[in-house]
Amino acid sequence: MTAPTPTPAPYAQPPQQQPMGGGYASPIPVRSTHLGHALASEWTKIRTVRSTIWTIGVMFVLVVGIGLLVSVQTTDDDFIGYPFTLPALFGLLLGQICIITLGVLVVSSEYGTGMIRTTFTASPQRWRVLAAKMLVFFALSFSALVVAIGLVGAATAAMHSGGGGSTSGADWARSVLGGALYVSLLGLLGVAVGSMLRHSAGAITAMLGVVLLPSIIGPIMGISASLQSISDKLIEYNAPNSISMLFSNAMSGDDTGNGMKQLALLAVVTAVAIAGAFALLSKRDV
Image 1 (cartoon, rainbow, N blue to C red):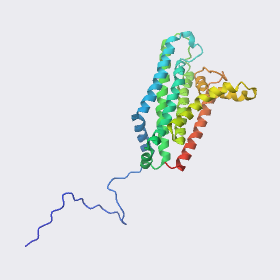
Image 2: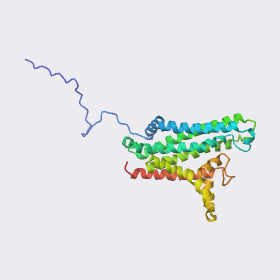
Image 3: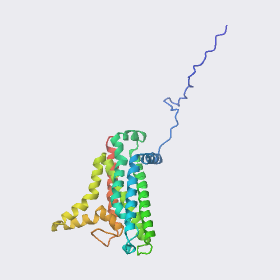
């Protein structure tokens, strides 16, 4: 009598093909990762968290809202010798705090929640993660600032088209692109400081000190004649005055400057801070 044929188990899986030489072969396709994957991941993070919506939204309201209010209250003669983008300066001096805060939170918030461990597990190349954070943040902040400043300038030019406001392309580029670049670099500096300190409150406090202390300490140091030269430099290169110079409205210091020296100095300081952030990132544990 013939023996019955055994019935296969209902959930039996076909044997996995073993690689030559032994070892485990994953049934999941494996692809090598690159910077593009990290950029996509960071873009998903930054556009889906509420901190981005609030900080960018408040910045936009401050720059555009205050700028339009100033434009309505001014006359055509007020813009003689000044670019039409000048009203955006008043909101930008406050809006820079929003960009700095977002820059710090881009990296420090993950350390605060512990999610940075998951991020580094998914992407062991830590430099790639930090580079992606910086690139995504800079692109977002610069674009938002250009739109906000440009919108105020266009609205002001329409309101006061009969005045003597500057329509020079150089003035527009310096105020719109230069102003957006300066504030974005401040935010990028915040990303680097947040990566080094790994603490949101501490990094934000440090960045507020960078922005506000020179403009406060500078005039105080001017009381002493021996410290006058240092006082003058602090007054000339502090953040509010530097931004104002890009809009042809220096608060103090070298009234003939156009803000390019201040912008170059900030770029150098930011580059040094970024180098320090990358160096510490590879040496410390999570």
